[in-house]
Image 1 (cartoon, rainbow over the protein chains, first blue to last red):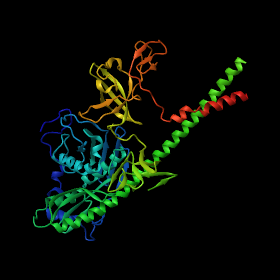
Image 2 (image 1 turned 120 degrees about the vertical axis):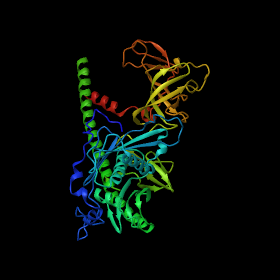
Image 3 (image 1 turned 90 degrees about the horizontal axis):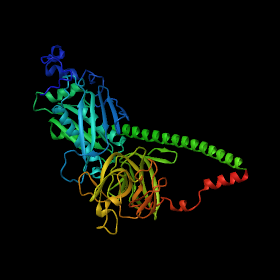
Image 4 (image 1 turned 90 degrees about the vertical axis):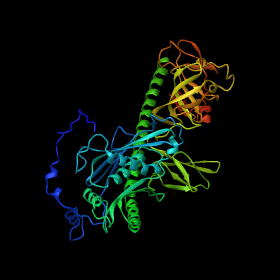
Length: 309
Length: 216
């Protein structure tokens, strides 16, 4: 891999200190038993079917046309959307526009390794997944032969990154006034055996992926949903799961997406309300200024009339 | 959804009404016989011909592009003997945040005498032009037309006249600078005011002023 020598790369033979901690050496079974305590709660005190609280806001990046920020405890995601622009190397005419998505981890985002500035395979996979999930919601026919850029920067990653990225992208697109069919929200679950972890953390996701048992269910599912139209925009599964489990999880995910939806709605309505207030204030100011000017004009005119008399 | 005074706030994906007696305007789309909102903003209803037109007005400039049939405002950059290259600045009422390239071909400049026309006698670099967007056939270039009487040059500065002094149209193909009295050839647009009735009536503002002055 090419190294960028203008950046700080660290010594070549450096190893994360986590390699030498006791946690690193734990076996799968140990980690598995740690996930849930005796009362049936998870490590961070949540119930199995409880999602993390979510903080949502828009207008986060001043340079972008539209942007958003989503925080779910350890997962923090920023998304920015830019105006349509020309596609650089395009030589075929098309009737629909393109979405260009880029997901990037901050160097310090992940617990397990330091992220390089060169996009790695995980970032590329997330970018593709994001494009697939957001694609159905944007009215692409309105900007044929142009592309809209969506950049997602994951500041801190603690599981459910893709779900957070999709929800953030949906909000940022609406914030940028890109014509959309619907607001898109996403949610994810991790499955280990018969346990279903809603809105999993990094540890839970990691464990669901590395399960050594091939006969039981294990994996991560992320689903994006258009809530107004009741359509599924994207469904992404990693791992080995049987059909009953997937059907059950789909219903759960639909409910979870539906739970996120009001938060996005509320944020968007809030921004429109603020906008209306701002417009009112500006128009009042404008009127006041006009009235002042009119007074001055009259004064000036009457002075001319008086002088001429 | 929420109401703020009399204004109705919409967000994308909100079902606004059925298609019966309604039509879909800007910022909305039609699906399965219903009209949905495509932008977040304020719902606007206009009634014409017994059909209520629904549109959603965004509070920020929507990320839209010029489409075929739109009237755009463009600035001329390059003029050569076959075509005029320009940069599109506005489409309809909305100001575009990025400039998009437009082209006016020689045969699309005016309706009559298409073959005998010289682009140099119609446009000059720096002119502000009203034009209509033609169906797209090329990547990244919008083909424009100024064939209608209402389309053509609206703001132009004559050669050698001070900056900021724009010429006044004197006939269909000529403009004159009020300062230097230089006459130049242009494809002049006959600008029609948007509210023609108001323009024909005398303005109330001036009447008030006169009466006030008379009283004094």
